[in-house]
Image (cartoon, rainbow, N blue to C red; front, side, top):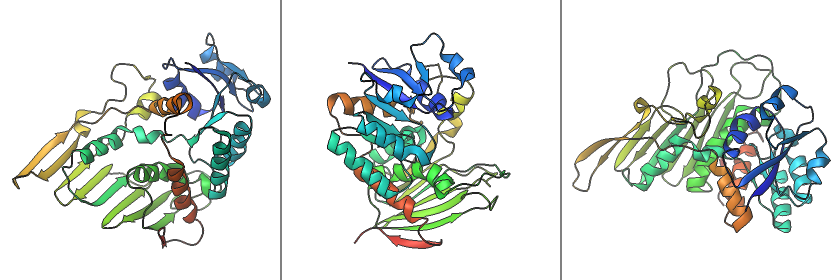
Length: 347
């Protein structure tokens, strides 16, 4: 069975993170792309395909053949577009951040449940190569009981031109949402969270740096992001009672897409050998072992594979409602009062 879908939004996200993966999947057909302002120069790339472009939203919403809509517009519009799609009986995938606040998230998920539809955010970084490798390390139980995880998303971009915006336009909602989702997918609701959200480069703009710590019993998870990092830090550092794991370098899919490579091309998404992680642990005899851990190949297109299974075969969503709401609660709480602070998430 082929699922027929449409897009609301036709910007970098649609072109870079969605269409390259969809166009090689035979069970998904992109029929219509709506954009408020047409971009003929971008549309030319898809001449000869079956994709129809329009600046009339109702052409997409009123098409009974379209079962599923992917929304890739700016965050402030996500709630309204998703609601209209659900009201028209269409499944929905929404770019991150899902919506701008918890109330909007709860309303959309309630509406989707009432109508028997799939509604979730596009959490493609569950399929980052580095995160998949972390999951493999945990599955092998090299580290024993975990005591600390540190996850970084650092960049060297010291200049920041004026781009005023709302809280949901900053780094925590934009990149922190991915880091939070990875953690929540593994460990669920934290006991408590500490926040330190800042604007370091241009005070006229939303936040551009954060350090957020999540606590799960004895496990402490540190999420850090900054644009002022010239010397690369590890992407992941894990410590357990039996061992440690360290990995430099981020997933290569984004860089390869920017360079013109496409999913399915030879070498697409492959991590360089020098970026492979290292694990050190004590074996069952108490002898120290050290190993190189080859990086698992990532694939953002798997988000659509999970959507297909949920829509066609009734399988569980990749990102559960509980995960969605937990992420939204943690994001929203960051801006409810001045930072730094500690917030309890368990009674």
